[in-house]
Image (tube, rainbow, N blue to C red):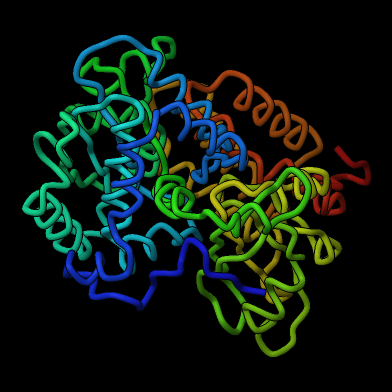
Length: 415
């Protein structure tokens, strides 16, 4: 079933008017937050076990506590709105249908961690939403929610909107920061960690759009609606993007514990023309894949992990029987080969050579040795790449080897 906790404001107010947002309770969470001890807010986020919704799954309460504890002047809060993961478009919906909530969330984050500046890093392809966010920032400043002495609490904070140039790798935190600084969007080594030395060498707290957007709703959730949803360790709700060969692709807010079958057949309307499912990819291009045997698995962090996949960015791509697994893998590999920044050898060379071997498989010229080399390259990439792109680029390939072993049965012996 679909629920409306994070999405409860969708369609309820004029997204160009701060007054309209305030009529549905906008900025009441901020008014409440600035009267609270910041540690009480981080305790709340820890209690409901909010994990980062961008894919890393890092606990939000812990991240904000750590960012608050870092000593330094002019701290920064960054909203990662790059959303470059293929088949993932849930952050776009939050920006489009509830922009003022995102602004409010960033101000609360700044209050908690002690930041004076904020950046929204938006992917280039979302250029049409720039005027919407710029208008929201301008109106928030006119009403005293941004600028100096916010709500009379001696708290100063401003937000700046920055658009990237369309590089997938800039979804990675350090590459995103370098892009804001005007440098090439390439990852850097850690440490120093972002929380200590981020944008312009200032202490920085970076969160995903969905992660931030939850906070105002949670602060006003006195009835515990969010905590009443979910299953096991996966408390609350999740925005998911469903794409591919389904009848009703789109974004849905579900309680954790909803089965994959319910998502695909009830919310997304089933598979087009009742065809059979070939595979489902979870969490974007860097996600793992499964076959139809996963349909009755609950959508939770722990259940999906046990089934060999992951929540990741919240994307689900459904591929029906018309597409061959090998063609899908080649398309996925083409994406990573093009998007690698080329800075580190494992990712730069690894993506190229895996692409070459997959093309040889399609041509029928691959050997058992090629398959063994491909596996070795994939493992080296996962262990030694500089950033998450190289580390996870071969998730799809490695999971395909488990789900579709016959595809890699070259010369009568499986790799």
